[in-house]
Length: 253
Image 1 (cartoon, rainbow, N blue to C red):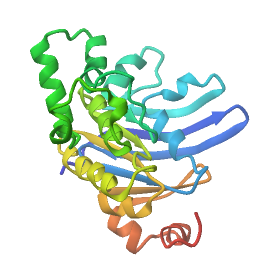
Image 2 (tube, rainbow, N blue to C red):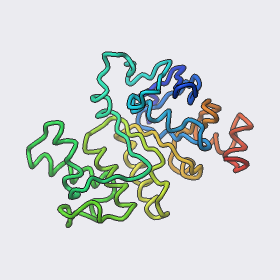
Image 3 (cartoon, one colour):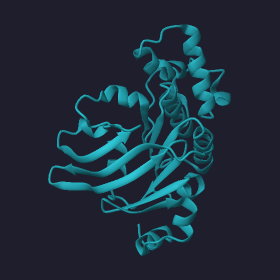
């Protein structure tokens, strides 16, 4: 496990019009670890996650202050290429949205847009990405069937595989198991635990038990503020802030 910082949020704030969603967040994301971000609805978790690959650029009412550094580079500098950023920092959303194409074409959609055409290379990307998402054994004999025929849990793992096919450095996940059954959730969690050796992972979850199971470090947000961050076992057993203790023990949220 390394202590190298992959992403550094420095006094970072987000505003949607007159509403401040994040208030001066300073938070490091360590390479090859899973950072869990927890907090009640409206605490700013998704705003922070979307900021890390500049998806908030798509909201004309959004403005930001402060810095987010990726490998030491400020991603909000005008010359920083947002398209290139999103290849390096991929995102999986709460609701799986497979393309109305075959499983194979779902996985290679991004790589093809990036100019990869060689069939052998595409085949390799498909197999490797599906294996990494713990889906290959379930679908390897039906890669030409529609992705829409998969179960919800399989669709979410397909969406994870689609991100992995772009060979990112960081994977952002926004409530990836929110609509899934326990078995599907377990498969996603297994995949994340295996993936952190190659990727840096940021997981937003409303499920504190999930954060306790998979995160190396956990950050607790409340009303747009970072209340506390630390090793997951400490956050859940000996938090320093009473508000953290109240949240992880189920007193609110």
